[in-house]
Image 1 (cartoon, helix red, strand yellow):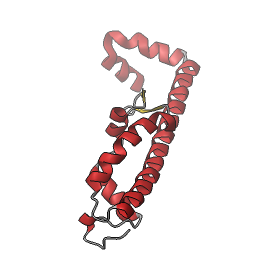
Image 2: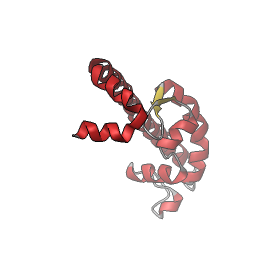
Image 3: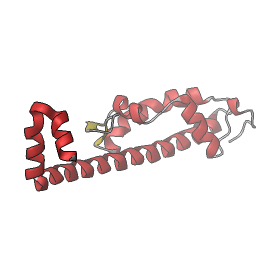
Length: 141
């Protein structure tokens, strides 16, 4: 009954359903490969996030020690170029913003999935105990 309903919805494309039902191993293999690629992309995106946190904390501590009045926007501007050039060393591809296919790693594609911004930098530094001027905390980190 469900198959008849699906065939009715597909109309003239019902041979596609015949192909899918007759070639289940092929269809399953294609989905398995897609799942593996998707998983690898998610893993690489997580790795990018971890390495970005390390980079921001390292630079935040360094710049806060040099200038206690520094802001997260300044740290973001200084870290962005280093971050953008490091991306290709950290990963090969990440999932597209719709999560359907992989896209090469660059600053634009990663920023669609991962919010690297001055606000994010401020939050990461706050969580790691680096005090900046806009936090209203002390001046030393």
